Amino acid sequence: MFGIFKKNPLKKLKDEYEAKLKDAMEAQRSGDIFNYSQLSKEADIIHKKIKLIESETDDNN
Picture (tube, rainbow, N blue to C red):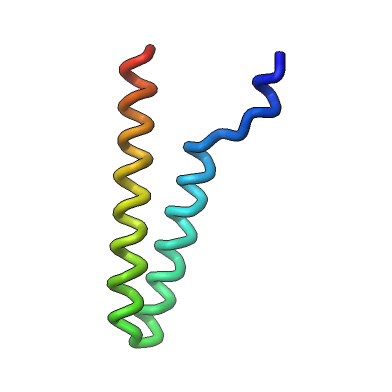
């Protein structure tokens, strides 16, 4: 009954991932390659978390 109030962690991670990629792209365009590299690395870590959650969800079904 109260499942409708539960936050979806997968959606939150996907939003974070998209934001990191956007920030990384903007850093690259402005010539800040170090910041681009850091943001890309953070985005990759988030992407791995997303894949892990998706695989766990697939295993449960």
